Image 1 (cartoon, rainbow, N blue to C red):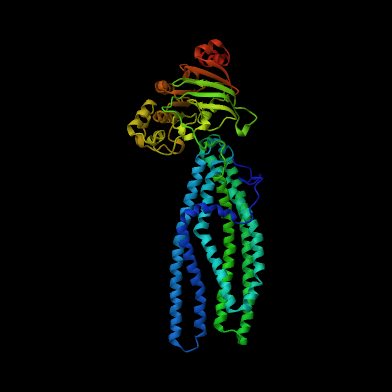
Image 2 (cartoon, one colour; image 1 turned 135 degrees about the vertical axis):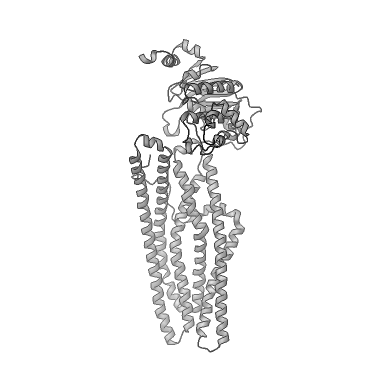
Length: 601
């Protein structure tokens, strides 16, 4: 379940070179571009506040230099000017906060939607390589980091850059001598920022990977909590989750130590330099080469510059982490799917008849390429025909269903619907003509009505109830606390296995599609419910192409044709009676299920 912390960081790949800067944030521009007006307004407010901040020391200098001049009116004007500057600074700062925060919220919302839009359409092979919990971590945790940067850190960084540059220019205008001494300190400050910043960038990325692994481990265990508890696996699950979480914590400590060290070095160097420069400036004042106000003005600018550098060293770490988060999200957005729609999709002829053909189809799952799931499979199913696929577990029956839905593409061969190859159609265009009842029915944490309506969102309440009756689900739904409006809980925790399957069957009935796929659709039903549902399925399949995957042969005896599979190949085909008379695998399975020979076996 959880990945061992002894391996490389989750989400890391051997061929990915670690980024040494924050250029990963460039990937945010497509999301910022639609809000250029808001971005420009935020930048103007930022420039205003930075400019106002830089004018304040000028007012302070005038006050100090004229403090002993005896001109009360002029002194009062300077104090009023200082108060006006403070008011303008307050308004500008509030405006900047409102604009950049709104921009951050909007951009992050767009990123979350874009990532979800991308991953919700990825084929199942994508999820063979990454845990859903890790995807969710990227959508939540990583976007939160980006929100912090776009909505706060970036504007603060830009403001401090302006204060740094403006402060340096005004320091130079105030005292070139003292400014030259300050500039000698710049390389001493920049070197640790760049050196430790690169290390911080790598550690931050690793930290986010382990946070994602922790989320993936928790998601996997919690989604199967009943199985975990039934097999008394709680202690081991706790241990596995704790192990991954502790590794994440250990990596975060390395990040904290690195960032703390960078902050200590930068602040010490900056303020030590300021103290030295002040000592020299104080001597200049005593020597009469510099006024009191000029020294105070220089000190204020020096503190501004030092504070800007210190803030930038802090924010640099945040930008590094956000760059890593952006890279991880871009990986999802840029993920290549093994199944894609054609650039110019063909069009299915209307109405869709439901003729299905496999032509020498070969396929193996990416996770086990050495074992073919389908090996040279060919067959044709006529419109309205009911065909059952039977065989031992692992024979390739469910793979047939997945290939018809184009969850996977064949390694070779073709699959056609009404004579049109599936890979020449857009997936939405043909999937809307297919209804599926999976072996593991999926129940959403909504009402019974909404779960059934999932098959056709525009269906009326009467149509929903009619489908439920046909699936023998109406009676137990009415027995729920709120009837059709009763919430079914996450993954249908409020229902039994058989009830879940009946909801799934009702959903497929409501879809009213020309192709019906039943993957062990009645396996969890009791005898009475199975009989009722079987009657509904028989009635439903009369005018539809129906494919049935089943282990229980009693559910497929009435099929127009039965295809027997073993080891990914078709080994026999015919009606129930013909296959029993023929002998072979099907006859052996029938003997096991329909005769007293079960005991002998």
